[in-house]
Structures are given as C-alpha cells and as structure tokens.
Length: 298
Image 1 (tube, rainbow, N blue to C red):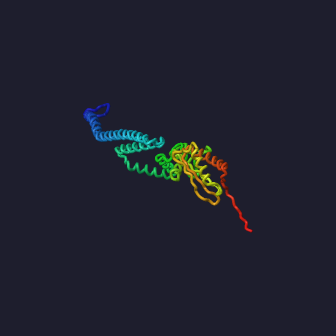
Image 2 (cartoon, rainbow, N blue to C red):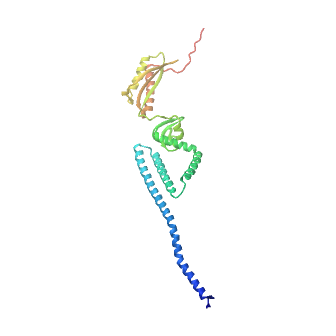
Image 3 (spheres, rainbow, N blue to C red):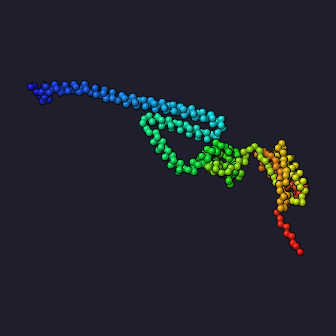
C-alpha cells in the first residue's frame, strides 16, 4: 500500500475520491436539467394564465371604450346635460373596466366573489355614512335626466324662488330678484312641489278689480276690455275675455284675461293695473275700499 505523503491517503483512496468527484460532476447537470424539466408544466400554466389575462384585459378595455363612445353619441342626441353626460360615461367605463379586472384576476386563482362581497360591504357602510349627500346626488341625477327646469328658468320651490344659474349633481343655485344667491340641495327639489314659471313661451295674464254697486257695470267692462285689446304686448289672436267674477259684500268683482309672452308678463301686468286705475278715475267708476257702515235707529 502506497501512501500519499501530502494528503496522508493511499492510492486506492485517491482513486475512489476521484471517481466520486467524476460522478458528482456528471450528476450536477442531470439534477439541474431534471429540475428545469419539472418546472415546465408550471411555467406553461403560468404563461397560459398570463396570456388569457392579457387577452381579457385588452378585449375588456376595448369594449369599455366602444361602449363609452356609443353612449356618448346617444347622450348627445338626447341633449343631455354635460355634467350628467360626463358622470354617466365615466361610471359605465369604470364599471366595465372593473368587471374586466375581476375576470382577469380570476385566471390567477383570486376569488372574485369574495372581493365583490368586501367591496359591497364597504360601499354599504359608506352609503350609510353619506346618506344625505347620496340622496342629493340621486336627486341631481333625476333632475338632469327628467329636466323639469333648465338654466335660465325662473322656479319656485317652497319659500325659495329665483332664476336658475347652475345645476350640479348635488346642489342647484338660484339668483333671486334682489340678486341674492340661494343654494338648494337637489334632494329637496326632486321630492317637493316645484313651479317652473318660465317653462312655457307665453302666459295667461289675469287682472281682477272690484267696482262699486253704484257704478256702471257695462262701461267698466268695456274699459277693461279696451285696455287689454289695445295693449301692444297682449297677443290679440288668442282673444280677450272680460267677465264678472263674483258679487261681493261691498263690490262687484270684474276680471279680464289675455295672453302675453312669458318675458313680458310682469311689465304688462303692472302697466295694465296702473292704466286701469287712471281710466276708472277718469270715467267716474268707483273702486271701493273696505269700510263699515253704521246705521243708528231712533
């Protein structure tokens, strides 16, 4: 037996070590190759899922854009308010994109139902905390869709009235006759009685006046009718109606009706009221005021 003086090993041991080293060198590539081969099915599955997710995202986002474009053209033909149009288009686009992301995430094993349930619970809690704001928001959407009034209309709601200067998704702004700015929540406008004074192009003007029982009734009716028929802002083609409205305790109540443009309504009313008083004074027709007659018996 020959000893290796440097390592203290026999030649047989050295040969055995060399054989083991050679076996290990041959074994390393085989182990790495086998390991890589074992990864192939997983990598193929991952690649398939990535490909399907990418296709779902591309197709879904493309569909969202097409739907948004088509709805935009439809809303334009409907003459929808710009603010509502932008909101609805954004909401539809976000919803389709969200569903697309959920469908893509499902390819990676994410439970979409659980995610939707969590988002639903969070949305419910948020809606309860913002109940009034969401109510006003829903009212704003209703107003913008149904259009009971538009910017520039004069409306009356409860004790507030004025010209509409802005319609938002939550609040509506009015400018009053004395130039005050009134901001009303849309929830109250959509849930209460609302009068749109300027919705129509023309309005029927009615003026009533009481005359004394001793005055000439026919002459009083004739003067009232002439004032309506001669006024340039009264629409003559619609005809003027003069009538006896009632027989009161101290006066005979006369009335006259005629049509005028909505924007001329108040000017015509004020002018006719003034001219009527002057004409009755000139004709000697008495417009009685409230008084008490006391009769004393002997």
